[in-house]
Image (spheres, rainbow, N blue to C red):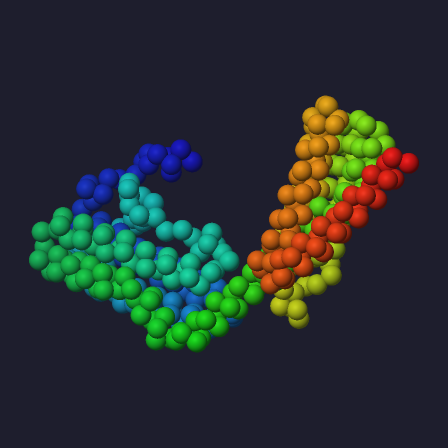
Length: 327
C-alpha cells in the first residue's frame, strides 16, 4: 500500500528506453480500449445511443495499439516488455469503471475527454525522448490524433445522440436516480424522523433522564432502519417497477431511517435533560424542513404543501409522544 501511495519501486519516466516507452503506450491503449468497452456495456441497456459512442472510442484505441505494435515489431521484434501505468512513477492513472458506477452519462463523457487529454500529454513527452525518426513521427501523429480527439466524445455524442435523444437520456437518468435513491431515501428519512418522535419524546417526558431516553432513541432508530431496509428489499425486486437494485434501495432507506431517528436521539448524550430536549426539538424542526425541501426539489411537490403535510404530521406525532410520556 505504501509503495503505491509514495511510488516506491516505480520507474521514473525519464529512465524508460524507447522500447519500454512503446510497450507502455501499447498497454495504455489496450487498457483504454477495455475501459471504453466497459462504459459501453454499462450504458447499453439504458442508453444504447451513448453506448455506441464508447464502442467507437474503443475501436479508435484498437487502431492506435495496432500501429504501435507494428512499429515495435519492425524495430525491436515480437517480444513486447511487460510495463504498465502502475510501473511508472508520475504516470497518469485510470480509474476502474466499477469505481465510477453508476455510470452517469455526462460523467463518462467527461472522463473520456480527460483520458484523451492525458494520452496527448504522454505522446508529446515520449516523442521528445526518442531519436528514431519513424518512432518520433508515429508518436507525434498519435499526439495530434489524441489532441483532435479531446472532443471526440462530444463529437460522437452529437452524431449518435442528437439534442432530443440526449435530453431523453438525461431525463431517464434523473428519473432512475430518483426511483433508486431519492424516493427510498426520502421515505426512510420521513419514517425515521417522524415515527421515532413518539417513542423518544414519550421516554423523555416519562423519565426525565437523558441516558434512558438515548437508549430508547438508539433502539427505535436502529430497529426502524433494519426493518425498513429489509422491507424495501423484500417488497420489490425492481424488475417490473424499474426502481433499480433492491439492495441499493434497501441500504438507502435503512441508512436514512436510522439517520432520521438518530438526529433527535443523539442530543440526549447531553446529561442535562432540558438542554438535551431543547436541542432535540430544534433538530426535529430542521429535519422536517429538510424533508419538505427534498419533496419540493425532487418529487415536485409544491413547497408549502409539502411543508404543511410534514410539519402537521410531525407535530401530531410529537404531541402524542409528549402526552403519553407525561401521563
